[in-house]
Length: 128
Image 1 (cartoon, rainbow, N blue to C red):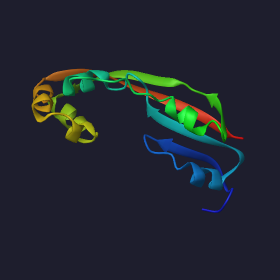
Image 2: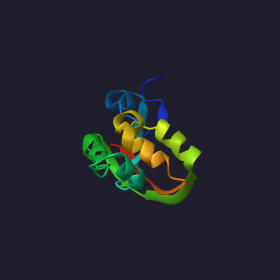
Image 3: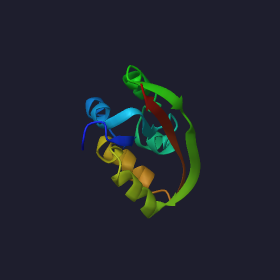
Image 4: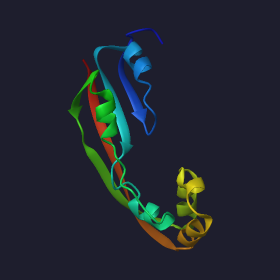
C-alpha cells in the first residue's frame, strides 16, 4: 500500500500496527477501532472462568492519543439466545476455547439455551 494513500483504516478485534497505519493513512484520515466493550459476552466468560475481568477497551485510546484525535466512541449492544450447538461453535471461535478449564467449558456447553450480550466498543479516530 502506498504511503498516505488511504482515507480510512479499520481494526476489528485485532492488534493495531500503529506505524503501518500512520504510514498508509492520508493526513486527516480516519481510523475505526472495534473491540469488546466491558460487558461483551460476560455471562459466557462467567460460566467459563472462576474470575472474570471486564474488558478494558480504553487502552486503545491511550495507545493512539499521540497521533489521533478521538472523534466518537459509541457502544453497540445486543442480546441474543443460543442453543447448545451454537454456544459450542461460539466458544470454539474465541480464545476462551483453550483458556477455560475443560470441566467448566463442558458444564456450560450442557445448557440447552444460553442468553448472552454482545457489546462492541467503537472508536472513531482522526489522524492529527
